[in-house]
Image 1 (spheres, one colour):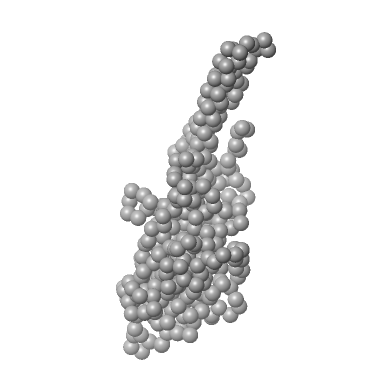
Image 2 (image 1 turned 180 degrees about the vertical axis):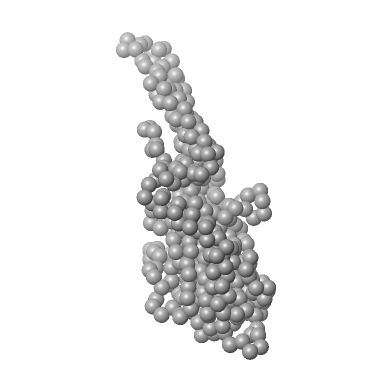
Length: 361
C-alpha cells in the first residue's frame, strides 16, 4: 500500500495496451465504439456530491478545493500529482486526446493500490468541448486510519482534475478543471462515489494553436499541457461543508459580485465587457493588425497581372512568370492575415468581448 503517493499518466488511444489498467481498452480492428455515455446510473450513493467544471471561456472561477485548502485541517490526507500531456491536438486532424485515458493509482504497482481509477476522455462531436467518462474506480480503504471514538467510515472527500498551460511560473496557469466534492462518505459508499459509465461535466476545449501546414512533422502533436490530479480526505465528516461555509462567509461580497456580473453578462453582452481597459486595448490592437493584413491581401488581389489580348509568345511567358510570383505572394499574405485573425480572436476571447466577425476572403 502507498497512501502517501499518487501515480498518474495520460495514455493516448494508441498507448492503452501499455498499461495493466487499460490493456483491455486498447482499440481493435473494426468500427469505432459509442460516444460519451449519458448520466450516471441511479443510486450512486447517499453522499452529497457537488460538481464544478470550468473551461477556457468566461471569467476564471475559483476552485472550491483550492479555496478550502486555507481552512483544511492539519490531519487531512492530500494526494497530489502532476503529469505532462504531450499535446492536446494533432498537428493536422482531430484532437489527439480523444479516446485516451487518464490513469491514476496510489501505489507503485496498480495491483497493490487502495485507490485507483481510469477516466476516458471523450470529445464532443463538434470538438468544442470534452469530458471524462468513468471506466474504473477503486477506493477500498480510507487514506488514513480511524481516530479513537470516531464512527467508522465518516469522511469528506474531494477530487479534482485540472489542466495547466505551461508558463514561466511553476507548473503553469490553470486552463480548465473539473472537481467533485462528497460529504459524509461512509465505508459502504467509497466504491460508489464514481461508477463505470458515469460522465463527468463537459469542459470547454482549449483553442487549437495556429500552426501552418508543413511546420511540424507528420504525426506530431501540438499544445502541450500539464494534468494535475488532487484528492483530499478529511479526518472527520462535515469538514468540507464547514470549510465552504467559511469561504462563503469570508467572500460573501465577492460571491454576490460574481453572481451580479454573470447575470449582467447573460442579459446583455455589452455588460460583460472586461474590467481591465488594458485587455480591451490589446484586443483592439490585435483586430487593427488583422484588418490591416486583410487590406494588404485584398489590395494585392486587385493588382493581379493581366495579359494583353494581342500579346506574343515572349509577352505570354513573361506574364506567366509574373502571375506565378503574384499567386505566391498572395498566398503568403493570406497566411499572414489568417494568423492575425487567430490572434485577434484569442484577444477578444481573453477580453470577454463579442467577436465582430471575420473579414470576407
